[in-house]
Length: 170
Image (cartoon, rainbow, N blue to C red; front, side, top):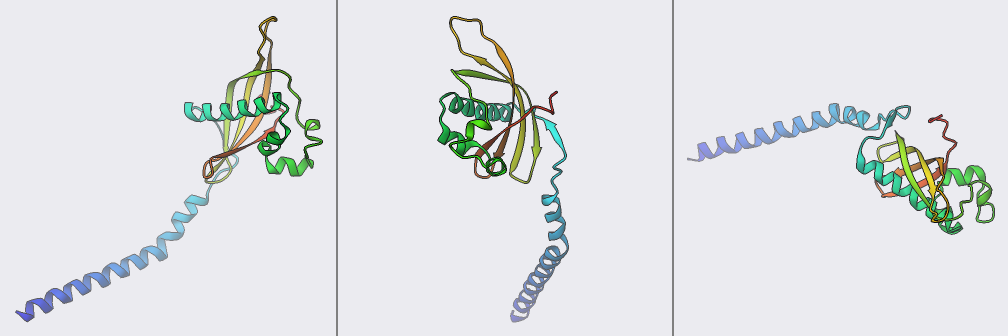
């Protein structure tokens, strides 16, 4: 009886050792390959956004920015502008309107095209083209082309804005 228990015990120990060796081999040889795939993000690849949810999310970010702009809410605008853009242009509360155009009155934003560029695993840069239309009851509404960049961080669910000249769309 002890003979069969010893055999089973030896078999279990042998299986555990084999599994440990295979797990070690897996970690040594295949961990680096998986990591390389995760880190490879082609920043030069810019794609048209065709996902409705993503399109709407980015459009909502632009609308929020335009609302703050129309309300002259400098404090909120400073929060929305990307840190890189603020640093490059030394933007402060006192000089913010020299770098972004003032908008008067309520405006409706209608996105036409959005392109996305993946910067890393969680951050995307969106090049947005749309039109803004002034809300007006008395006069006929006029539409203006509007271009902007939205940087969206999926890990923290935050976004930032950068003014854009629209060179991609022209």
